[in-house]
Image: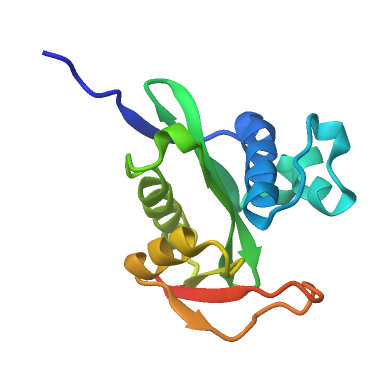
Length: 163
């Protein structure tokens, strides 16, 4: 009899850079842009959380890492945006998709946000990310008007989730 690898979620800022780099390359690929061979090639606008995840995702926020059989296969960051929690950079490695990794990460994030007293979670996503949008809607997120004004001309779909 074979057993499936165990899926676990823990807070792990040390694993954030590798997962963030994979997230940025996945984003570039989905948008039809070239990817980066090394983190040193990342543009400045991606460096905010990559260079210092503790400053961006440190307490009272966090960075959650999903491990499947002990290997990091996904991550999601969160920080406070006023009284709410803002969800950032949900990523699941291609080989782990379909194993409920994203849902498990989001459930763990919701638990932490509730424990911290946040009334809701907010997030934004590129409209091309139809699988992510479907996940958020399945989790109960509802489309809301833009809640930030610092995205410039990038079209984003914004969501809110009442905790």
